[in-house]
Figure 1 (cartoon, one colour):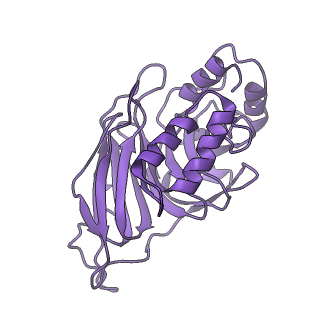
Figure 2 (cartoon, rainbow, N blue to C red; figure 1 turned 90 degrees about the vertical axis):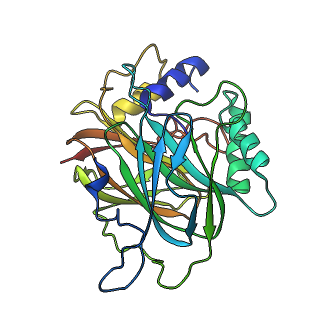
Length: 306
């Protein structure tokens, strides 16, 4: 629910510190039946515009779902654009209005209010990703979705006033042979921790599938942002700890990706295809105590995609 590096840099300055759809075999039609397991796979095709979300089906059955996510929102010269698409539902006892109020708090530029928003969202909502994508570089997010009424929103271009546009998705109890467990292999495992750190390998394939697991007690997401070759985490820490007078010297324009906010204890798989190069993993969720973005507190990791 927070933007990529360039957008976050602009926020820090303001606060003063504060593939193609056929890229993966996961994109099976809902009528496809695995020859060996006889399980029916379900796919929801998701398109973000930067401010709203369109889906090709509004009712599915509970199980392991493939969300094929892409955006029609072009990337601007300053690096903004694309889509930041979230999938969530209110927890028992909370309402949609409660979650939207919490979200407004989490985006506050007053640290104490932002921290309160993160605590509220953790308490009031189950948030299941989905994906942060740019035009021409879609992703497939695979994860288990329980029965309930969910909502999708795209916060790349949030409204200046009023709530974001919501798209409802109804998940019914599973019928016979609906796939419940993912059969995808992941080449990379990433864990987001309570110490606001990413535990992940440095070397990744430039295309494949990673598993993201939030093992912490707060919200996390993971943006994959391209940076210059040779960039180090020390450089990134120095940038965030000092006075920001412009974009970081290590920033480069280029396609990125990642997954959006994930509730504590949840896991998802992301199938991606990005150009080889150096990238940094970032989380800009407001800390639930200080209200500072996690990246400022050290939640970044430089990786190389080969």
